[in-house]
Image 1: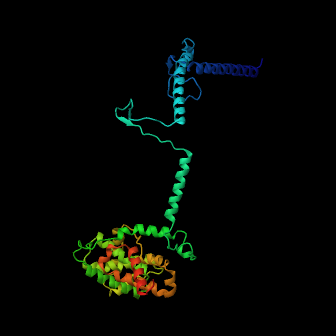
Image 2: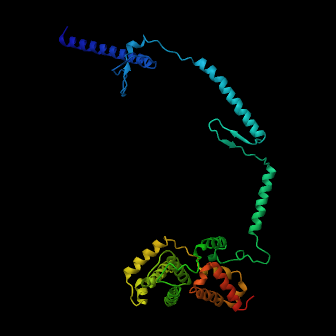
Length: 364
């Protein structure tokens, strides 16, 4: 036998031996997996299962056969738990039947086991399908009564054809503005805390704002909003006499940016004050005003209410045209100087101006 043949036979024998050891290892691994499922085995410091990356110590597979297996008496536990489950199911089923059949009839108080405080048990009323139908009909009737108009009152939104007046939700907008105008009502003495500024100085400042509004062709909404911002600022923060005109100028500038398409430049506004204030002073005062007002610029305007109220008198508007509306706005402008008019809301002032204008024009 040659040397190469011997080497080939030796390598073949070694591979067969290795295969036997591997099959034995797999069988031992199977025995080991079966053995670790039982308790009571002695742990060792070796890992016998492939890909076992845990740090737990595993028992020796050789000693697994000697450990007796402990059997859990499943049948006895099942017998004990079965009647308990049946009792619970019977109780719950009885309660469900009683709840579905009739309402709970209980009076007085009942005490729970966990707490000593009594728990009040409310009485439940029987409500049938007919009761639900009656309640729904009552709700519909109530909605009809609330939505209906008094006799002789015209619904101004039914026959409105102008799309810009939004007849579908115009009344909702007016209701929202009326709910938001209550915060603008102030007493006659709201300027007592300010030592430098008094009602006379306020009237002079508002008169100057009206002149600026007419000179720059600004809208009435800009004027009304600037005056309301001015009063709101004076309530929350006192100011010196030297900064009063700067405050009025800044309020007019903010209102113009809110309502106007092309607001005036700061240079134009400061020029109207004979360059008493600079560009930086106006910008700084603007930041102060917005912070004091908490950036809340939602001020209902009197003009919005005037336009709404004039829709209720279409004959007078058709007869007098633009002059009736201008007269209403003129009457509102007169009230801006008077501090006694601070007790009334913008909607009430608008209604009074429309009524006075109709009286002046002798319109019923």
